[in-house]
Image 1 (tube, rainbow, N blue to C red):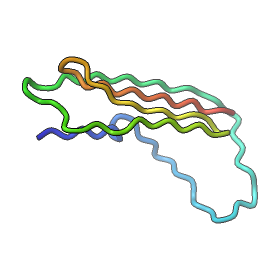
Image 2 (cartoon, rainbow, N blue to C red):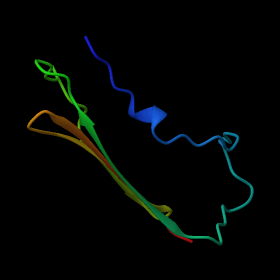
Image 3 (spheres, rainbow, N blue to C red):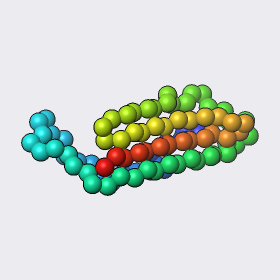
Image 4 (cartoon, rainbow, N blue to C red):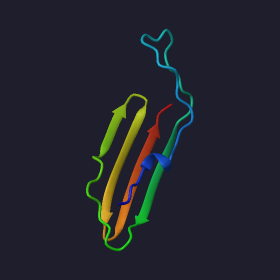
Length: 85
């Protein structure tokens, strides 16, 4: 059995504190786009039992999309993170 964890590919070390009611607006002065495409060649005879569902989140802060595909003997992981200013 082979496990693949996409969280190992791209990790963010900063997580803001959770607040029940914010007293100040969140302001970001920078924008950026991160695109990842990772192709993993699966060993002969290995096929996934299941793949994660696609993720597509669109908010005022930006967009986040993740998808997984199988093409031949390759597992393809695609991620787009589009952060708005």
